[in-house]
Length: 161
Image (cartoon, rainbow, N blue to C red; front, side):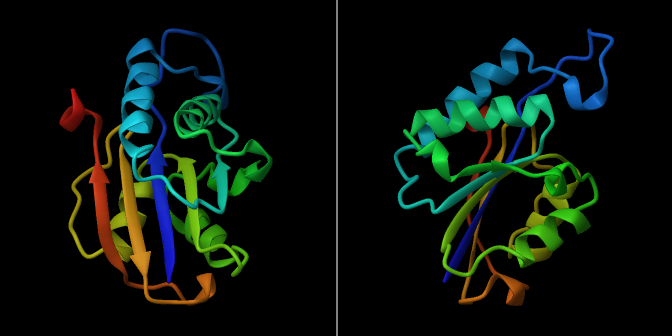
C-alpha cells in the first residue's frame, strides 16, 4: 500500500518585484500552513519521505507543516521536478520514488496538484486551494505502478477556520 500526500503552498504575495520562484508567503499563507499542519499532525504518522518544490512559497509551507508534527528533516529533499504546474512533472517524480517508502508527502503547486488529485483519486476536486492537503492511497507496492487510488482525506484551510 502506498500513500501520497499533496500539499499546495500557502497564499503567496505578489507585492514584491521578484521572480516566480522567489515569491514569499503572505501572512495568511503562513497562518493557513500552521492551521493545516497542526490539524494534520494528529494523523501524520510514519511519513517516510518529504519533498518540496524549490519555490520559496512551497519551501516555507513545507517547513511550517513539517515542524507542526516534528518531522525529521534529514528525510526532506528539495527537487526541481515539483516546480510543475501541469502535473506531468509531478507524476513522473512520484512514479520514480523509491519503493521502500510507503508514505510520502510533497509540497508544490496548482494546477498540478488538482490534476493529480483528480487523475489518481476517486473524488472530484474543483480546486486544491492554497495550503490545501489531499491524501491519496493506492493498493500497490510500487510507485511506478500507481494509477487510480482512493482519496482518503481532503483538508482545506477554510474548513478549519
